[in-house]
Length: 149
Image (tube, one colour):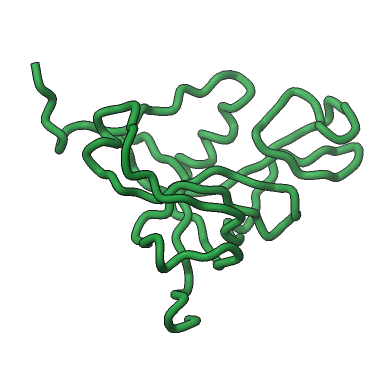
């Protein structure tokens, strides 16, 4: 039976005990990473231990949601899920958060075209509802390469 593309949504996140605080923050419109209580480093994705000092004193920490495009590409074929086949081409890449150079998240770039983005382009987080009550963070460019605004 064929599925109607208008009712399809991308695969939904399945929080586990470690990632649950992140997804709870997303549901409230807040972007969270972890901060180590021992060395102060920020990290993502969530983990049981600090990736820098191995401390277990890690806790959710709210960040600004501002950053810059670290890398990106346009996906035009080879989608592994029917939803992505229906929205191709689309942009996907990495965002370096403003709070720390090595704090990088994956994202789509809704509302942008390949020619409008560049490495270093300023972006800001938005929270998109995938299905009723299920949100994901995605980043939108805050200025255009043509206008610099």
